[in-house]
Length: 185
Image 1 (cartoon, rainbow, N blue to C red):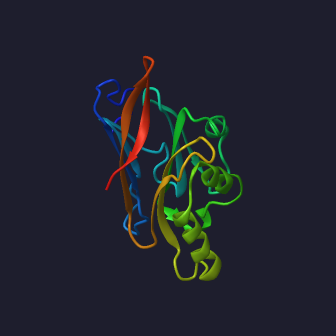
Image 2 (tube, one colour):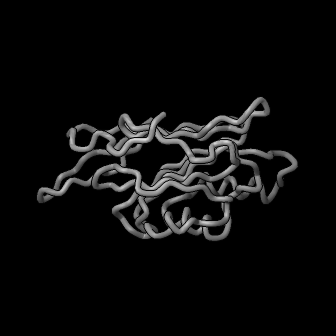
Image 3 (cartoon, one colour):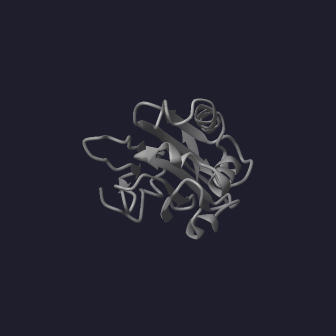
């Protein structure tokens, strides 16, 4: 997939968005992916076990930041958008091991953006069963960066890859278009 700068903004129709969380594979790692409209994105270092954070501007659906987290840090190019309702966050695990279970600053960002039952389930699994039972996971959060805006869209698997489908619906008010997230599937 190639990186692009425009995801079909301005067409008047909903813009589909699909996020794929790669599952660790002993035969070789695969890359997580994000497709918004016709533009595809992958993490910069796709062979690294990480949480891939992608920030999208809701006025034009352009990716404004993309970085990897070790499960606890929020890189500065991502954190600068925290709390701003103009931006949308994807948190996508990439070949994730249990040590990437979100914690600290990353946990706080994800919870403020709209994580909920799936991330809490992941935390409970690792707190009660530990990593001796389930060493890998696949998780995706898609949510606006406005704090306490609404629940985000989440998916989680402890034994398979995950795919999240959604769309962005263009809404124009006083000549200004903003793309509202719409859950699908």
